[in-house]
Length: 316
Image (cartoon, rainbow, N blue to C red; front, side):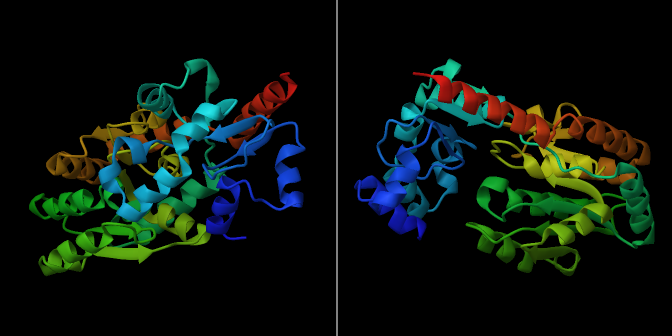
């Protein structure tokens, strides 16, 4: 069943009997996303990934804003027995923007991928030594909220810095709202920019691992992030990170990355150049990143989610 049809049937209380029972005949219902659910007595736990659509509606299309209005996410959050959020930053937004009681909010960070650090580090060093260029990597949807255009402009500033002539920027991720503006900016500038920026589009898990193994620095200059999972993946892979100083990113990176103001392209460029130019700094950030990522495991996430499920299910 398509999401659109499911939404309409749910909102109008018209779900088929068998589907209705799958919601109402349970002890507890876990929603990993804000899709509407039928009105029911079954307690619901809602995973709230972020409130970017409330904090920054300008980063979303009119169609997307209309969808958010239709599914009434605030009402869903208010009716939920408990909320699970991936960061303290998202928890603060739920309190500040929606007045959700703090006691109903549970902060459970997502886990980092498990890697064989020894073989990964050796493989990474070999691939980087074999490469004639130094790669700056971005992973995520190419959209306005991710500040991709700001990153592209910051990369262009590297041309003015000694020792960065061989740098290249790889943008890996689906094309989202605002990607056309980023592509136009690239095509409107000189060959140094156009020849050194690669729009890879969507990548598989294997391709992502390959990109991380070759990256000299990972950059996430987003205006808003609810969790920052790509940053965790990069730190687990031992890639030095430069991240925005806003929302969940300072919290997730925990002092293991260089923080930059996403509105300051010169600051982003300076941080990228510092990592490319200073091997000692790059090694320190890589080591700190691996140690930080090791604190985030899916086992911890699962254990905490299971405990909330049990607690809510036991309630009268």
